[in-house]
Length: 575
Image 1 (tube, rainbow, N blue to C red):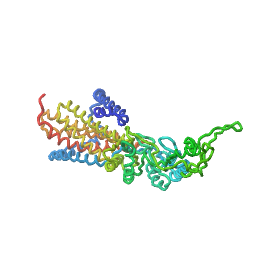
Image 2: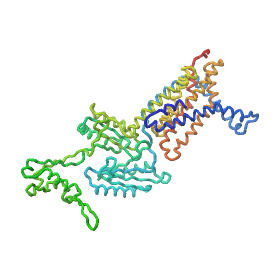
Image 3: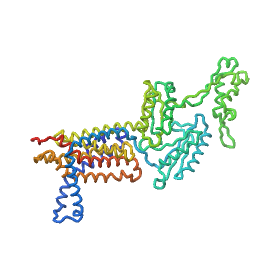
Image 4: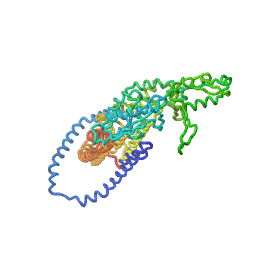
């Protein structure tokens, strides 16, 4: 177990931050436990244990059951060893199951926890006024009050002005009662609200939940970045990309940060005509600024109080682009000249903000996953669309929760491989053989197949918690193989044949293997049962460990003796 968690301690990135303390605590606890087992336990046993002539009542009642259980296993093992080639078939099936379930099991960074809050975000078209947005946010707040009786409070903000949000945006943060005080889960409430809020067509409204790991502000789980040399190249491909992403059943909502929808009016001054009419270009620009921007002209004092003087054309005279042509400007002779004679107008749209990623012009496609779709599947869908739409001149990357998911997956796979290598080398040194550790390592695919099968059966995902549980399984299941192989080697040294030695070793170690496996399973059971606050994210870890232990314990008792009989040396080497 210490060797298993050593790589976890030195992991970098998100996985390292999450499990460094966990790995250190487990490794230290196992090391201290080993020291106590080799020193204090023998001493305490010599002082406390006594030889009994008559066994206790509990022993007399339970011993016949365990004796018959051991005898039943001995008979089953003898029958299996007569067809020991089945052990190889089981190993091949385990590898096939790992490959199949590894491809089909959904993967994500971490399951969503019920944090008793969610957020509804609204975004109107560019150019929408504050009054328009505020009216809609009030309607949304009333809608939440009517549809979510589980609410404990709400906070609504119109035009927040932070996080790149403008006047045309707003949100409502809904705080729910504690999970034990409501009948519906947070996810059920969000699913219900998401379907009903679509009736508000004046703005785009979508719901977000705080991620268990990473961005706690309720960002999108899928964040796919498209990079190009300039904005024009992005402008060519983004419409097609967004059409395909929005049509995908993998996503409930798709958004883009780089939008070419900010309305603008480009004003071109005819300088020759302005010079002939005696109008200064500066006067034209100041007229537009003072009439439309709502600037402060000055202050005045009345009754001992100071007031600001703000000038602006009345709203009725500035609602349409053509209203700009009705403004007048004075020339050098004091005559009023209508702007329509001096300027031309061109309506166009442009991005409200330009973005860069890794020093390239970029656009970030963000998506909310559809119900039942995992983060890994959403990222694969984005990559599939990119392969159809983008050519070699574009590059893609991940950001946010998607990037953390990709980095954590690669880190955990590396930790898994390092743990396997360390365990094999340690066992090779202890057994002074490369064959015996190789036999013991066959417990790993059995455990891995059991863990993946359990995750699939209980509709769980592969995430950082279940993957750490799988790494933990390596140390838990290899000890069962160690017990059988070590005892079989001792029996071979006493002159028994390989088959007799391994069968006697397996039967003799049957009870210790069952006891240690059951104690581990019962210890992990509260995690799998989702007991306690915030336990949803750790359920997959408990299920992976318990499923892997059950699957590997049962098969190890039959497969390891069969594999040992094929690989182990027929004779004991002379030392």
